Image (cartoon, rainbow, N blue to C red):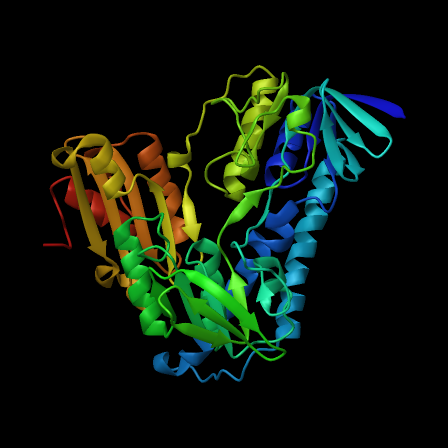
Length: 457
């Protein structure tokens, strides 16, 4: 056995792990980064980036279908899935190469192999032991399934759906969360007959109900079918199709089933509990500064209870790096982390939903305003519909922002500043939004809540 030493050992090279490593190196720390697959993790190789490339391909397909409506001579002749894959893989390869360059330039030692945590703290990879003053756990997540539902054949996870070498005719999506609605959106843009099955009363059930309803209206208009309040009961598949039985006795048959019921923490068999880390339902228990129960062992990203978002893991990685370096960084709570579903239309939010705000502050202390994108010139030009909803305390700060519409994910940063800085609508109302932009819709909502609506009655 060979023992190696470093200031910090990071276990996992996904969004949280590599962000921590980069920031630590920037702060002068000697860092070892252990990764069993590829730097960038699920987000870069099997999640955020490749799925958004598919969604852009779907956007282009939809634009081609509607080109004649705006006087452009174009036609939609189908999807060349091999070329779509090449386009997607080219983007991933370029981002991967750039990340490898960053890691190398910062002098971070990368160890290829599956690591396990040991007391000390240290990470074992094969016969080698990498001991650090601190260890950061960033081992990410995996696609969950449902009890009695085995993945395989025509039953896919999101990773396998990315690798499909055909455009199917019919797909059933089990789960109406972010992964489910994004894949449903892609497939519908590609011409697939899609049915979403969601056990809860709405698509994107974690979002404000106004956003969920707006997405449901848009999906109905696009021809995406969905069954809400229905649960998976059983499944049978043949060489040519798969049939899903639901709890109400109905059934849906398709070429494939996508299981999109969330992601679980990748913590099993990695020595966490043996080294003193406490797990709860597989997640790592930490304090508010992301320290685990084991001394000098930290955890970031999807293994920490809360939002499973790449940018949350990225921020947590930076936070822990600065905490180790003694910089006392500011804690960013999950409620202040922006959330985006990149479907067509997009759904973006930050802060509290109206229901959460009422539960926390009381109905009399909360006021909400909803602006329809039908009144926004840029949205009309783009051909998108949707809403901007702002939630505030009466005579108090903005508590939440909820947006639905194509490209609204690009607007969420302004809303995040308003929520994070506890700005009052009256503070924001004087600021000018360029015309014509979709950002004006946010401005209109702030104006209305400040008591001086311009384009709304």
